[in-house]
Image (tube, rainbow, N blue to C red; front, side, top):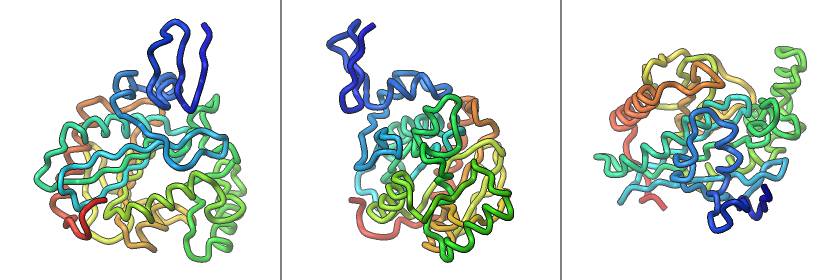
Length: 276
């Protein structure tokens, strides 16, 4: 079957008048529990950057009326944690359904920050440059601490190479710039497969989301939690799903979402200017 790809749209000869939603042609066949309809309903839009390998980095905003609270949700910063991206897609749908919350939220979703790793066969933790994106953020003393940690603590594990410099990668630069542009009051980063809940930054952390309980795992040079939570003072909730290749049941995915909303309502005041 002849297929033509133009700007992220795949048009198959069998359906010449039907265009597949951006990104969905690749992601539906790669990610677990991601039906084509769910991906298409997500309404992904290409962001202003591409991955090291040239794949668009997609974004989806879901904004309630008069929202002042801004929440950024990131999936698949590690490409071999496929379930993290799928859960982000399911949460986009839930955000669309729950748009009229008592405390309105402007959500920004980046469901697949590392498409190079996700689309690799087999999937890879790193991007196409071989960099662990979650060690590439500009934490203080990055040049000294990231190199020391990689060399001494990981024994130069290639899966955890922090890169040649902070923000050396287009994916980490894109997320850095999105945080600067969007100014979120909360960052939620979805990972796998340790089955726990981690937290960095101010505020009282959630004690649980669904079946995941708080178990703070430490601070790493160049990590998003270290940079965003510790040094920028933006709370970072890190969700570690129990399995990297399988998503939780839909009911559990929704329960994590509801618990997150409850915690946001209790702990995060809608500070700042109206969402933009």
